[in-house]
Length: 334
Image (cartoon, rainbow, N blue to C red; front, side, top):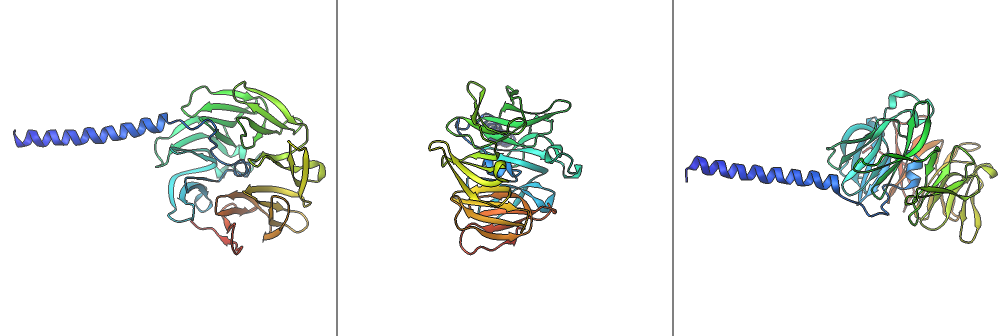
């Protein structure tokens, strides 16, 4: 066989293999399916901005030192690297893609971060193959199974909840109210009604119907996997409580006036801004309450190893502390 022809055939075969590899990876990323009960981030993180998200020992996060650009690192904070320069909030992730709301930090405070966001997107773990689901402002989104539930702001109409499949099909309104999500539980999505009576509601993704689950005024409610509903109670001057719907038992976790909180396992972090402002750590039963940082903080995020938080008046700085061992707060610089 002529050497030139042989070389050409070998080159063609190599190109076909390479092309086939990238085509196969493209369609795998496009067509993969999550388990129906898959959850893309914790409700606790999402209710605090969703700037950190952990999956498979990887942490995807908005880097405050780089205008909230999307980064990834190992769960022990090693090997941090940028994925995309896009400023992000409400991060969700699965085995193939990262989902987020694009934010523009230059738009000012306005009506909160809902006016700073500019659409719902996803990319693969390498930072390529971007998908746009909507260019409407989206403050919070939740990946549940293979569906993205998101706060959809439409000018002159307000914010309601829409759902769209991860392959961009069947975009439709599911809740005609402004709500905040809690963790899905036993196939249902629980949410706090922010525009009406502030009760905890339950949404059935199959029947697409909502019901008033617990007629009690709640703020930042989360139906936790331990069976308790954690919430800030406006009726008791914003104390942090938990409620067991099976035993109808309500417990006070702290009598402090709480602004924000996050929970990981049996640990709760909460912010107090009146009296003696400080970020606290307490057990889920209300014991062992200690101050971990004096001052006012927000954007409280948790991963398996660390809690992350930012000064309320400076969103370009992030601090962190390990959940376990000697409690020591340091500046987090990836």
